[in-house]
Image 1 (cartoon, rainbow, N blue to C red):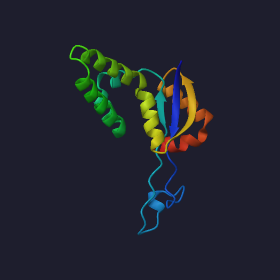
Image 2 (cartoon, rainbow, N blue to C red; image 1 turned 30 degrees about the horizontal axis):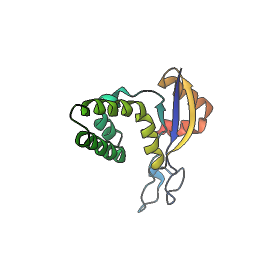
Image 3 (cartoon, rainbow, N blue to C red; image 1 turned 135 degrees about the horizontal axis):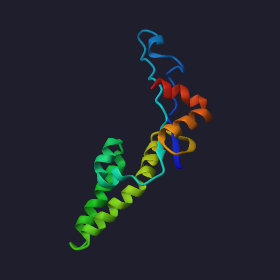
Image 4 (cartoon, helix red, strand yellow; image 1 turned 90 degrees about the horizontal axis):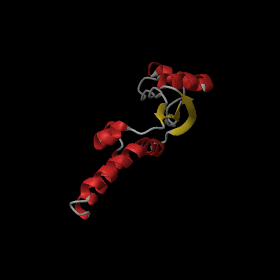
Length: 145
């Protein structure tokens, strides 16, 4: 069994009418953005972030985390002795692998996403099934995306 955190997207902009689809929007107004589905994040070590840290940050649009990562990498390369730098760089990648999902949660929270639920399931499909059974209101946004 794995643990998944479910993050709901930020509320619609105040000027957008709730439940109005772009086809129903009045002429001359900006159509409302279609609702985004929730994001499921598994509590686990991220091998992709461990192996491809900066690319993983770019893929998930984690700009601030990428800048902090690069600053720490530069500090490790410049301040540590030449013999210790490879071990410190490996330790940094190891920490990135362990904390990648937490950093992604932090980034989502900074962007206005909120923790909607915590789900225990053996795989992602089962997690979606349990989530939609527990929170049917999220089913509408997940089905529209």
